[in-house]
Picture 1 (cartoon, protein in one colour):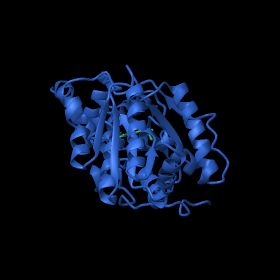
Picture 2 (cartoon, rainbow, N blue to C red):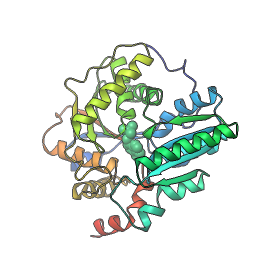
Picture 3 (cartoon, protein in one colour):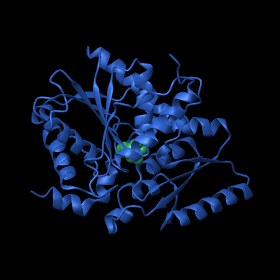
Picture 4 (cartoon, protein in one colour):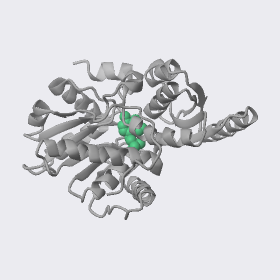
Length: 336
Ligand SMILES: Cc1ncc(COP(=O)(O)O)c(C=O)c1O
């Protein structure tokens, strides 16, 4: 099996993250054998899925001599917050280009949640109204760095490049080993999908492991057809980096049935899923990513998508600070 060790890597997290049984939630979902993989739990920057990608992305940046990191996201980007924390730890300058992509306004969304943590971790924040402004801001920051003799590494939205996806190739192996310790040979893995590095890395990792585990993908950003095209391309490029064949996606389970009004737009099903996870297991989810993936899990369990022998793993990718960006809506939705 090819390994990721030949790629530069900066240790940012503690691995493995916990894999926990969720019996009360499983019972509420009709007797599902449910585990939760806690990628939300880590010490740096309050944790989350981007730490895995950033280990490889920032490892490559440091190997290349970079001292300035530029990356992008929505105002409440978890990726930006974890990049800011990782840069603080590694002594890198962090420039966050944040664009108002979500039809969400008010003090909580525009000033709280991840934005407070970005400031706390010392990032330089550049708030932009649209893609055009973020493009000109990027050009300006690169020019300024050049003029000052700094070397820039640019990380794409969500850290979803083939190098970033290596973090989730490693996660697939980690999860496989944890499942094996529990005597579980095959599992269904439910995961949110946005910029795609998480699912692409898992798909490549699972293919390397012989294709025993299956992905159940909930689209939280783009419609399913577009997400599948992105995923196929990114997984192919990640496999190419590892000199292996691209994974097949012919019969992959990918759905946008809980996407609702689009990326970052709350739905009733999402709030209900947040409540269910909280009330049964004391697990906190965010409204943008895991809330909608959890709504998909609820929908799929109710529709008989899982067979009685299936072991289902819900991949919790983090994002809790984002809940506070939706504070007033959350307070109203969770009131009774
Ligand atoms: C909390 C959380 N979960 C899931 C995702 C989606 O991961 P990916 O962008 O790799 O598809 C993100 C991405 O921003 C995220 O912040």
